[in-house]
Length: 324
Ligand code: 5GP
Ligand code: MN
Image (cartoon, rainbow, N blue to C red):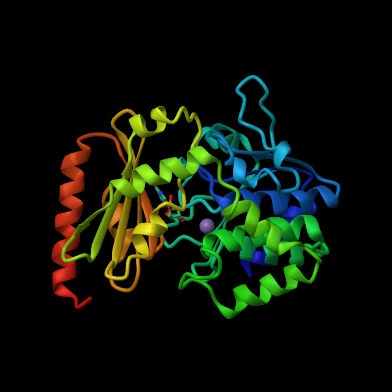
């Protein structure tokens, strides 16, 4: 079993690096910090990398301050490089060179679009979050899960299941969450820290997004956006808009929600969510992205308006075929 081989390898090796995908989310950060904490307990030398800024809302997690940005002038060589929650090699961003120079690469993920890019690949699309797989690996390594790792894994699962609401949530998800709670973590505070501690400007930005809401195809498609000018108007430099799309998705008539965020001028990061019919992963793959059947994303660099119309037309024809 690949999980056993991975845990044995991690037990043997000493110098280990961990990373995830660009624009990391709660599953990325939680999974990385849980594995980091477990490996440190085993006496390993470990570094954890994030290509861009780690979202501030996860700063309460143990070891958050240990996260490094890859630095060309401070290049380390690792026995093993573990990539978590990341479907493809290019999504590791600035970590690519360090991974190439490392001895062995490991890929632990739950995305259906994962292209098995590492030497050892543990990809399980039944896992609600990569955090579930990290939980297994830590157990297989024989490390007792304490509050530190439990907080991180709980965060990974909580965020990737939208608070245990999405269809990727299983009885195993709840079973693991129960075991994590038994370590004594304050799960109410974790929820509050992630979902109930917004800055005033974040809520105003949500207001701009809600103001842009449009419906298509008799209310089956919802579209929302944030432009650079909305962000600049509020004087924000860093924004975490990862939950905005839920408002569009949660409209009772909606089958597919799209959220477009202008990350730099004329470059748009698109997020998709669907409820029952549309495979949003396959739509995103057409534009070089990926993800899951019910949650996926991609980046559009040019002619955004044309791509937007194209996507909406494509969705409209798919929805007309089905009966939503
Ligand atoms: P989100 O909309 O929250 O950014 O992403 C939803 C899901 O799709 C996540 O699991 C995320 O990792 C994946 N995803 C988002 N953008 C991309 C992308 O550009 N490429 C790939 N391969 N996956 C993506
Ligand atoms: Mn994930």
